[in-house]
Length: 518
Image (cartoon, rainbow, N blue to C red; front, top):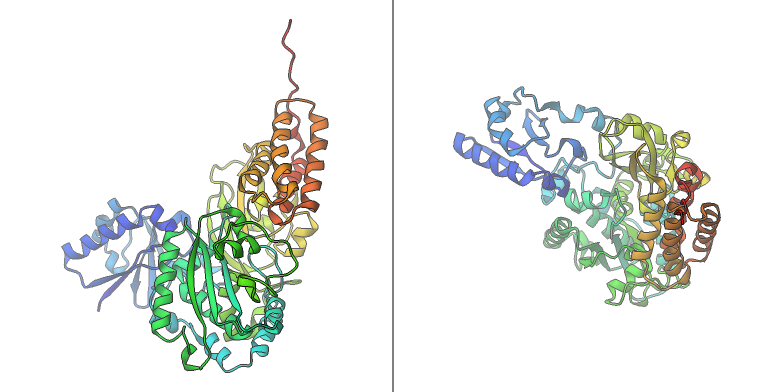
């Protein structure tokens, strides 16, 4: 029987040497004359174990990691082909606590299948949702998505079904589905993992969205910094088109839907939906005033659904298992699962898909394992560079849109970045303002000018120049940006700044300047 060895080609694994490991494994197979094949899968999301090499033995996957090229010969000597013991042996991968305790719905196949094998995709439940959708009326598909409680996973948390219903009801001969894959938040990688590790699920989700709204064309807009995701998605679209999943007659239904991949230059503001549309049209990526909403007049002035990768990739399981199945996970108005992306100064960084409701402390301390340095956790930023900093006093906050909003925070794209007690929160507040100043499209004054003045004011506080007066000024700038900015870039920048000032006031009280003696 042919031995199957899995080695990820996920960008995270590649950055840690997966390509060299693959070359070493290939050489050992040839040298030992083994009947074996290598499958380049996606990552399981346990980045501290990457590159994770898995061997399939009697239907079980035995893992070894983190593996370096120099370890490979010794692994084969220890009986890797039979799942032999070795210091890097992790046992059955599915039984590792980090994986075993997850609820993987959207990421059910990620790290398990060959990402570009349509046969693998179908063997693990793929296309069931699309086949069911083909036999449904458009309004019934929209109702299923609405009833599931799915909300936008890109950050805003807007109900997906309502957005789809608006586009379905909007008049127009031409409608579009646009996937926002411009993942630019620090500490986030879920979109990339799906595109690299299970691209067909995104294609299936977009096709279902097309059937639901009457859209016949879709675009995935991603960033140039994601070359592996772009390559995987481009190849997957070609495979899907040849298989009749995309094209003039989706799975022989007579209903048309096709799509293509577009690459942006990596401007953070193009993650905002209207700036993204401008970029997609070949224009400068600046924010549009709303109304009109993209659902009424979006891409090329046509009704357009704009959803995040994870939102669209969650749709196939909803259509396959039913709205009630998906809605049963979660809490309050936050239904289903959320892929937590744990990063920063943390022992066990990676992707953890679970139902909404875990406390922030549980995520950081139990799942993340605390800081990598072993020092106390000082702050956790949730929601990317525009997310609030939460101190340990707020670690009882459940991971839920409304619960975070009640504490002046936001979930965003569910990126969780951990900081230990050496972090200077005044510097972090300054970074938020500087980030906004650099990434602002410049269209509105509160964002363009407010962020620049914010950097200057933070510098004055750090230098001990009238700190009390400048703290008041910084808070006033935040208030102006929050309520006066045209989009979320300027509107959300105050979250990290104000939370840092509120929860870590000691970092905003440097020693005053001492005048030099005359």
